[in-house]
Every structure is written in structure tokens, then in C-alpha cells.
Length: 252
Image (cartoon, rainbow, N blue to C red):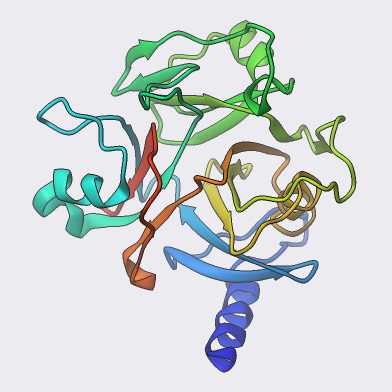
């Protein structure tokens, strides 16, 4: 197992590295392993112009997915095209999004700009969205509201990990709060890099991974503790956690 993991890390470094101008070079592999500052992470890539990124709450029967295994079942034959799926955006006890949620250009939940407690309200929080050209975007909620984009898909979460190349101002370098965390960062080309940690990590380390290793100027935190990944290429289907919004990335 150690040899296989090392080989995957080597492959990832070769496929996702910094170009001469500092931009991230994106892998064609759906998901690969990476080690950063001594901790392991799984990085899954959605390629702009090649892959389809969608958000989903419910199956055709109107019932919430809540679990990745249920999502797989709800997709039926279409599950064969899934590159990966991951929880995306924070939610309430019923699994409903607590912030903006847009599916196929239809807004199901309005943007949430209220103050409050918890990670969602650790401002700046942010929005991840897909435009009509298929490119991915992530940015602070206030900037999103001011810009007024017309997303095809969108989810709101928080806090932002990286904003315009700077770490969230309230993060410690390596704080005491440790969870298995997941999030998404975007490249200048509009690709989306979804990451889940293999073990509990701090906000500071998770944010630095996006800024320093993946070279993402903007990255958004999705969640911790419930973070889950379905990656067919890795024979991985996380179970046991109730989820809300899910991002599903499929190949053409």
C-alpha cells in the first residue's frame, strides 16, 4: 500500500504542477492522492469544457439523496458516467441548503448574507458556481451579490479558504480545530479542484494547500466531519453520513 500511495503522489505531482507563470496544470485523472505538509489529501479535478459539473439535492422521486449510496442508486444507468461526487454546501437538519442553491439555472434557495454562528457565517463566506460557458468560479458572497452573475449551478458555503490569493484573515496557522475537511478551488482556466483530507486537518493547513500547492487564488470550504467522496476510479464510496447538496461531476 505504501508503494502504491507513493506512486500516486508522484503521478499527481507530475500531472498537477505549477506552470512557469505559477498557474496549476490540471490532471486528466478523476482523483489522485497528494501529500502536503505531512498530511494526505485526495484531489479530484473537473475540467472546464470537458466535464459536466452539476448540483443535486433529490432524486427523480423528490426524496433527498442524503447519502452518496442513495445518489448512486438515484442516478441509475447515468452513474456509469460519474467521475466523482462530493458533498457541497452547508445544510440544515433536513438536508436543505442554508445558503444559495441553483440547479440547472433554477434558484431553489436565495443567497444568505445574514450574520450568525458557525463556519457558514465565518465571513467572508462564499459561493461556488458554474457559468453558462461551463467554467467554474468561486468568490466571497458580497462580491457575488455585487457581480450578479447568472449561474447554471451554484452552492453557498463558508468560510472562504482563499480570497484573491490571500488566506482567510481569521485562520490560525495550524489551529486546534481538526476535522476531515473538503472544499473546492478554481483555476484561472475555470477548472475546479475538489479536495478532501484523508485525516483531520486544520483550516490553516487546508487553505495553504489550495494557495501554495494547488495555486488556486480562490477556494471555498464545503464542510468538515461529514465530508464524503464517491470516486469510482478509486473504488471509493464513503458511507454513514447524512448530507445535503451534492456536486456531481460526469464525463461527456
